[in-house]
Amino acid sequence: MTPAVLPHLYHPQLDTIEPSVDREAPSSTRPIPPPYPSMTQSARRGTQSSQVEEKASIDLVEQNTVLPNVYIDEKVTDAGAAFAAAKINGALDPWSRASFTIYACAALAFCCSMGNGYDGSLMTAINAMEYYQKQFESGRLGSKTGIIFSIYTTMDFLGPICDRFGRRGGMFAGCWGIIAGVAVITTAPTRAQFIAGRFLLGMGIAIATVGAPTYILECSPPQWRGRLTAFYNTGWFGGSIPAAGITLATSGMKSNWSWKIPLIIQAVPASIVILLIWFLPESPRWLYLNNRREAAYDFLAKYHGNGDRNNPIVQLEVQEFEEGIDLNGSDKRWWDYSALFKTKNARWRSLMVFLMGLFGQMSGNGLGYFNVDIYKSLGYDDHTQFILNLVNAFVQAISAWIAVALSDRMPRRKVLIFGTAACCAMLACNAGFSGKWASYGKGPKNLNIGRLGAASFFLFQSVYAFTYTPLQSLYPAECLENTTRAKGVAMKIFVISCTSFINLLCTPIALQNIKWKYILVFVGWDAFETVIWYFFAIETQGRTLEELDVIFSAPNPVKASKQRSRVIVDHEHGTVHVVKK
Image 1: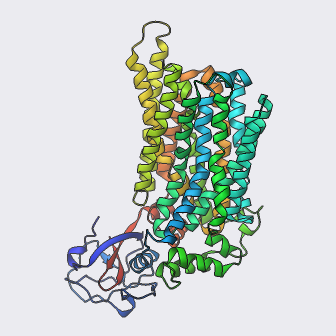
Image 2: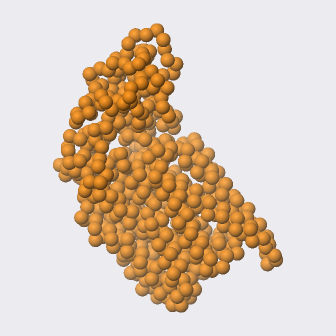
Image 3: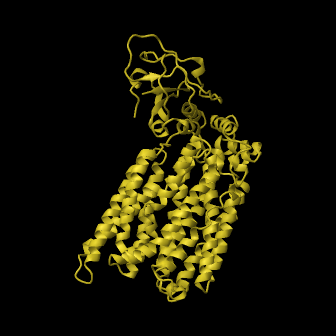
């Protein structure tokens, strides 16, 4: 939205960009004269300058007329303004070799996320396969199935490995764990060995999915960070779609290969990471944290600054490293999580991470592991169940990728509040249609009721994918500061592990015993989540790390996060200043 001051500050080269954190209007604020105020030397930046100043100020001419509710700070030390100025002179070439290296970093992180998504869709499908059930006699629903599914989530506390051995080292170790798990599972003659393989597989996924989002967040240039980090979590669908397609193709095979082939292919993304990860650079933040400053600065210059250490973006990041990274911090001690809780600022940050970990897994998405059984309960035959599983994966992926495309501009609070409310509404519709279908018993049925039940379940999963899939990685990463990021992500993964264990253990038992009524549990829970997001969610979209530090330290962080000012950039003069509204 264009600031109200623009008609009085008109200039051919002016436009508005990055929002920045609000402050109280100064008591010495004076009226704004038309058509354009002169600017102090401290506010001027030449378009060729490699220096970014920390304040943008304006000399204002005395006038008797005051524009209502519009102010310009006379002394602004504003991180958003500094970042806006840096973007003018520090633009990256998206087609350069360095940029393609960053894309490769994102692609390998995406492969780690693929492993997680592949497993979800894979287990949904093979659990319904005839020869899998003959081999392990677990039943499609019930406690045996619950154990097989949930054991996968019990080792999600190994994230500190990524602090000790680097983000690449964590991804490498995690992917070897995935391959070891696949080897044990595919050779399993008994249910006990299959469960042991699931345990190893989950351990590998846990390590890889802490290292991967941290890696891409820290390697990405600031101006690309939102989309690349959100893109990472859509790797779930990069795995779930192939898994659904492969299991559809093998479901007709009359042997154990019907379930073994999809399991073997689960090792492919992990193998790609193992083969290529050491050809890519290490995270600059990890390098700096481990006293390799020159290597960190070289990374920033090469991949964020077009090869120039004096690039404004690089200078801002170096300043951020020097001011915000504690070389003796708790991240040097694998056992020390105190930095996540010792200050009010840290506790608010950790609360956001905890809520995303909890709500991201307890909004009803755990039902997706039992897609085919939900479709079966609505009257669909075995082959159609597999087709719907594949189509559903595509629908979710499209929703998630749309959200990724919008992530740099998408307000986090509004999406979480309204998205969770929509999840509640769709599940309520699904429960209603499922209850009506169940009431028919063995008598005549209205097929449209079954179709509406399936459609509302599709819509629920689509809304969930739009709301939570990009933000599950992006939002915690935005909320956490540098020295707590790996442990904070590990904490989120641990919360996800606990909630997923409960989901995957209890859901097959509940669906077997109370059937569609179990969905009503999530209807009520999603309503509760909506209220919690409304009162506690912090808006992080478009904020620099410095701005977020001010917000989380405010007396009321929620209120502070909703306050905005506008940064105005004069491209001709290279000038940046902040307009208050």
